[in-house]
Length: 205
Picture 1 (cartoon, rainbow, N blue to C red):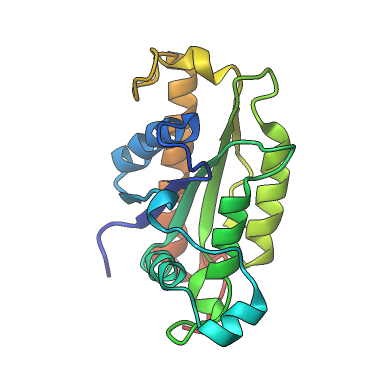
Picture 2 (tube, rainbow, N blue to C red):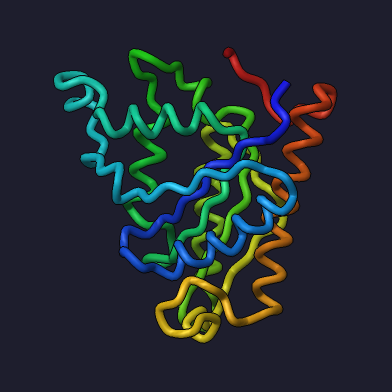
């Protein structure tokens, strides 16, 4: 049995210094304080073509999508921060999930997402904090077998929560909320992984 749960963290934005990436880093610190091992990845490092079943059949499974699949299978939980694009999640994030949820030569579809636990966050410079995107993201994750924590955070006026382009959050109240979400994910993973009777999902692995 592993001593630590493993969480894969990433942002839905491809922008280099996006608020989503900075927000998820704050939540990561909470998960790490709770004893989880967290891997942060940037979707910019896993560029994938728009999923097309015809291309998949003719050209095979995209190499970067396979790399992303492997990362997902190596982790127990997901910590995802995403901006809101036109009331929903960004195309790059949805496309990454679409690719990873397809069966490849190496993984069955159930190996990748099914039974995992996720915590989700959104952030926006506006007053609603990107909240409309969370219900869409939750629905997409649940459709591929991910269990999503009921607690979620929308960071409104996110530009005021940091000092310029710095990564450290200056709003102590929001910082505490994000870290607590990271803690909640880590603690729930401990319970479900180390107590089989509380397992949230099943897998064919």
